[in-house]
Image (cartoon, rainbow, N blue to C red; front, side):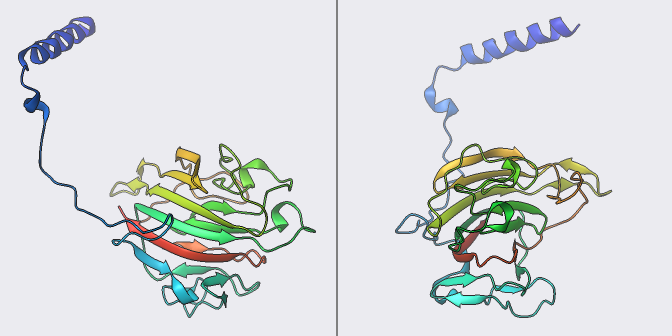
Length: 244
């Protein structure tokens, strides 16, 4: 029966194809994609982006993750710099599917190694960590180096610039979906470009990125973006997001 059904589908498809002789039959003109003006330079926010960190290191879009009060990190020009011991900071707004641009710079710490060197992280929906680390010329576990989805998968390549240079991450994120009973029906996916190079290609996130143990999804909705205080003075600038 299955073979007969397959044959019917193939014959029917051929029949439809054979009947289409006008190229306009496969053209459509609506909906028309809206026009969005891109940034003038690479990495500059397009006109429909939400600016999370712009000129003057305005931290008004960020709060302390623990207290909910003002973010207590330091400012340096247009950059917001981790203040060791101040704790993580999170966006005031919550997000789901998104395009996220982040620029970061590790401090000059040649005497430190592994996870102790330029360590921070970008947590999508406060759960799924894209690792920030100065892992150029420093040994650590590969699923914990810069560009990894922490403890789940290493980057496809290491596209870091030298220590102390500004790095850029462009993240395309699709949030997980849960049914009314809280059961996962579609996992989260992430694509990551490091300095313009694809280092994660539509990777299926296995659940929250755990330091110890295996990941396991728990139902949630839109949530904040969190930047990690890992006791290294990592700087961030030019952060913007587009909701998808």
